[in-house]
Every structure is written in structure tokens, then in C-alpha cells.
Length: 137
Image: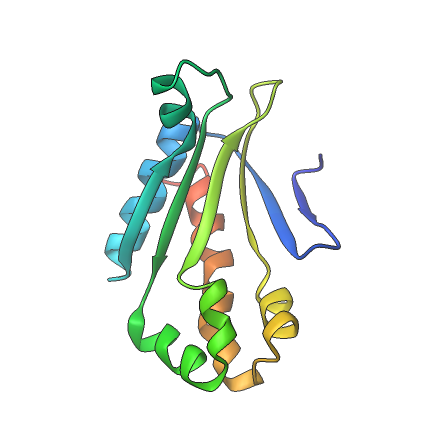
């Protein structure tokens, strides 16, 4: 996988130079700094381990801002299928760490969202870029 790839399924995947744990911690700090709400933090690999199953590190963060998401869902109720926003931080078999999320354009097309309501969805790209960068947060 290249360092930055958008698939035909609307998934953007970006390489992280940090571990899964560090990438997640950085992302959580950014969510807090931007005064967004962290609705859920799901540790898939931790859950698997508790059931005696092995899997590469994989954690999902579910976050957003009701002030931004509510108008989307009021306009197009099916947008709730993809809201709040999500990022998946995962490690592949070669120990490379990746962050994946749905492209704003994909969500717009999928739900027929008007341009003026899609802007808040585009902010996830900047959050991901900051979380995977080598810069201090």
C-alpha cells in the first residue's frame, strides 16, 4: 500500500510513523483540542485478545460535533449511517501503521449531501495528517 491511497470504495488510508497506541493518543489529543466529542474508542485487537483470538493492533475512534452532524442528518437522514465520523488506526502484517477513514466526497456522493453541508466532513483529513506527522502536538 502506498503512503496515501484512496480506493474506489471511498476509503482514504494514510501511513503513520507512530505505533497504533501513539497514533490513537495523538488523535485523541487533537479531538480534545478541537473541542470535538469522542463518542467511542473501540479496541478491536484488545477485544479479540480477551476472547483468545489474535489479530494485529486495530482501534476505531468515533468522534464528531453534533452542531455539524445534526444538520446533515436533518437534511439526509441516511447520513446517520456514517456519522459520527470514524478513523481506524491499524497495523498490517509488516508492522506498518495506517489510519483509514471515509473520504468526504464519498460520503457526499453516497448520501447526496449538498456541498455546503460537506465542509465539516472534510476536516478529518487535516486531523489525520496532524496525528500521523512527526510534529509535536
